[in-house]
Amino acid sequence: MKYQSQSVAKAYFVAAMALFAVQVLGGLLAGWIYVAPNTLSEILPFNTVRMLHTNSLVVWLLLGFFGAAYFLIPEESEREIHSPMLAYVQLAILLLGTAGVVVTYIFDLFHGHWLLGKEGREFLEQPLWVKLGIAVAAVIFLYNVTMTVLAGKKTAITNVLLLGLWGLVVLFLFAFYNPDNLGLDKQYWWYVIHLWVEGVWELIMASILAFLMLKLTGVDREIVEKWLYVIVGTALFSGILGTGHHYYWIGGPAYWQWIGSIFSSLEVIPFFAMMSFAFIMVWKGRRDHPNKAALLWSLGCATLAFFGAGVWGFLHTLHGVNYYTHGTQITAAHGHLAFFGAYVSLNLAIFTYAFPILKNRDPYNQVLNMGSFWLMAGGMCFMTFVLTFAGTVQTHMQRVLGEDYMSVQDGLALFYWMRFGAGVAVVIGAFLFIYAILVPKRQEIISSDATVAAE
Amino acid sequence: MREVMTKSMARNIFYGGSLFFIVIFVGLTVHSHIYIVETSTDTAGLTESVARGKRVWEHNACVNCHSLHGEGAYFAPEVGNVMTRWGVIDDPEGAFESLKGWIEAQPSGIEGRRQMPGYAFTDEQIRDLAEFLRWADRMDTQDWPPNEAG
Image 1: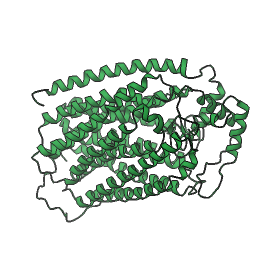
Image 2 (image 1 turned 60 degrees about the vertical axis):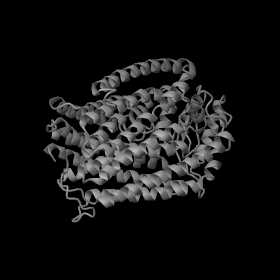
Image 3 (image 1 turned 180 degrees about the vertical axis):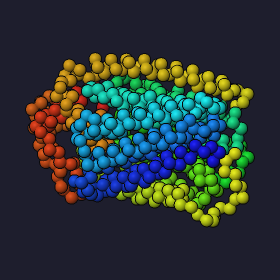
Image 4 (image 1 turned 135 degrees about the vertical axis):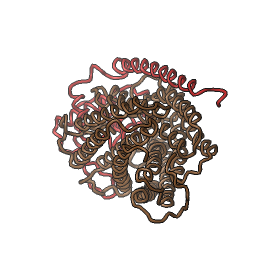
């Protein structure tokens, strides 16, 4: 660890992994309820389980992004973080909010209360007080990282990362706007949801990936940074108007069907570029970095993001197709692989890279870590395939033939059983990963005399 | 690529291009906002009751099982067209009665069947929810969903 204040990242990463465990367990339970629907139906209904699953996902990814920013900004800016104390305050606020959310959801506390009760729009269910806490934490974060960057060396990586983080916070403000008109509600709801995951998060993803490539492959910074601008350029050029693919059927004008179809088809490009970038950098790079697991996660991230977000997104984005597939298991298939590939893998890549450095020791448990990659990636791909089949059958029976929703669902049971099996593999992989990162080992199976932790 | 484009060119294209698309997007958003208010939704019919019904929908996290105009969870049926499906889209009293009957029959407790939680709603809440769902069903959604099954 070059800069003392980078150790802030460790606290963020550990908190993120704890919530990662909660997330996958919630997902497993939700998958089980699909095959055994009476499970806990009176105590912990499906909607509560799903809120815990999706909310913990978003929060742990954000904690990972914040941690990654605190980890890489000192190295890029070549100075200590403006205020490590503020970084811990920020984390404490976020953790308090998270605990509040979990308790509020499970026990349905303060039902309907304007400040303390859950708000109930999808993914933005947090009570208002938690949203305000998130906003305060976000402002502290932006102040802290911006001051650090402004005072230090400015690189393309920190430029793009900061832009992504500022965009993330500004767009979150739309979470506070909830009009009575459902059409308007949906239009601005997507400002948060779509412009996060298919906009500013891609900036964060590309800059973290660029940082990892720089460190792991030793390719010239000029080349990495030029690629970075090209990639984030294609991401925003396609992703901003690509929002239109959510405006087809929610009351928007018909022109969104063309704008959305054309621009969201182009959203494949940044993901293809990120994949090409990662592989070309590894081929070109001459460095034999000892952290093989971090390299595997980085390449896996770029590849699975291309398939999950790019290919599976394109699969149902054209309005003529989406008319039939909208809101079926096809969407669930895409959502799972896209989030896992683009954002989960990215976070696990930076955790894998950073932990040996944060703990000031060689990369350890690499074989276990790489095993966890194949378990999680394999499980997630299988889950995506079976949900795609389920969604195809559902689309035909329900949307084309017009059969009743529940009888179609009953016919999909086999796919839901296979999805549950895939979920078991993912959960085992997730716990293996956490073990590999946190529990030290005396002897490494992969021997490597390169003791360089970073450049 | 070095010959074709320098880093500062790439950076300028990124900033300039992004700004260009943001401006277009904001412009279209403004137009869509007006379109939603004036054309595709029944602004005059957005009564207090509809607005309260939307809160009932939200406070009970209905969207985490059901979908509404295709958005939400996929664990339970689409409700954006449920009032059409039940044949009560133009019948406020029928909509209230049908919804009340349905909600009070939950949870069904049938083994192997997905369970909707039991909600102790007042009649007013059920009426508001029914009004909200009727209002949502009347939105111009470009003919989505393809059929009554939702």
